[in-house]
Image (cartoon, rainbow, N blue to C red; front, side, top):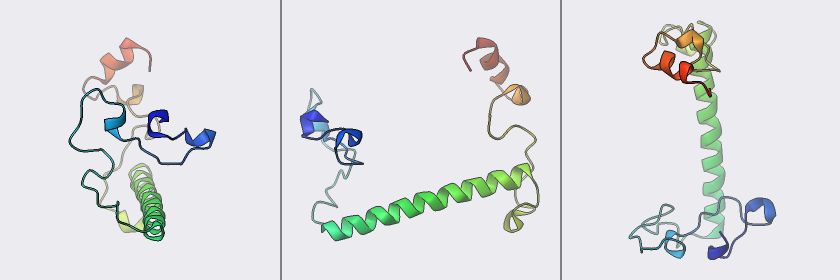
Length: 116
């Protein structure tokens, strides 16, 4: 971040800033991870702010959707729109690959290896 002239956002930097790869990579790279084709270079700050709000709202909606699928799988009938579409799940949805799921491939070996 310091090579790009920024600081960590917890130390006064800009939240969401992604440094350009060519400032710290030993070899030049043809495309950047963030905006590889330069679509946002000509956007006004107002349009960028509106896009950021839309992106945050889309992420929040996706989280709600994932939780709805998990709720319906764990408690059938809890989400009326998904009733009968999602198969019930008897495992531990908030602790995947636990001893409850030892019947899945490689889970037993993973649990035996420890560290989880």
